[in-house]
Amino acid sequence: MRSVLCLVSQQPNKPLLPRPRYQASITMRSVLCLMLTVVVTCAAQQQYYNNRYDNLNADSIVQNERVLLAYYKCVMDKGPCTKDGRNFKRVLPETLSTACSRCSPKQKGLVRTLLLGIRAKSEPRFNELLDKYDPDRSNRDDLYKFLVTGN
Image (cartoon, rainbow, N blue to C red; front, side):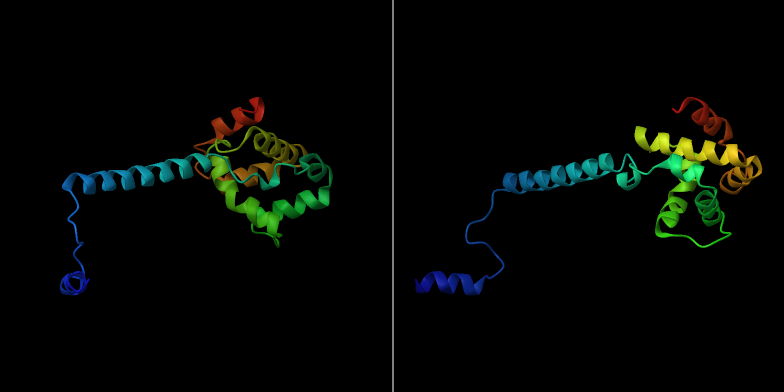
């Protein structure tokens, strides 16, 4: 017992039995595979936006001029924002520039309803919104196609 303690105390950072070289490479491969799996899983989960607003009643927002105008003023930096308004404002640039490519099918329907509602209520506001978030008009064709087809 005393000899083991002496051996341990003389070389505290060295294992008592050396690890075979191949075992270290297996461990490293396992760690790399685990990290790759985590990265791929996280990337796959970020495919769609958060589903928090999937059950939002977009028709009621479009039909209520006061609420629609409040959201419009929020995203155009012309008025105060609610928490929901800030969230919409945060994702709106990417949503418009990619024609809702990261949207789930349900979210595409909501975005399409809201944008078409703004357009139906006030064409100048709709154009002002597009000019703010797509000033060089590089994504208009894709966005119009999305509004017409829903895809």
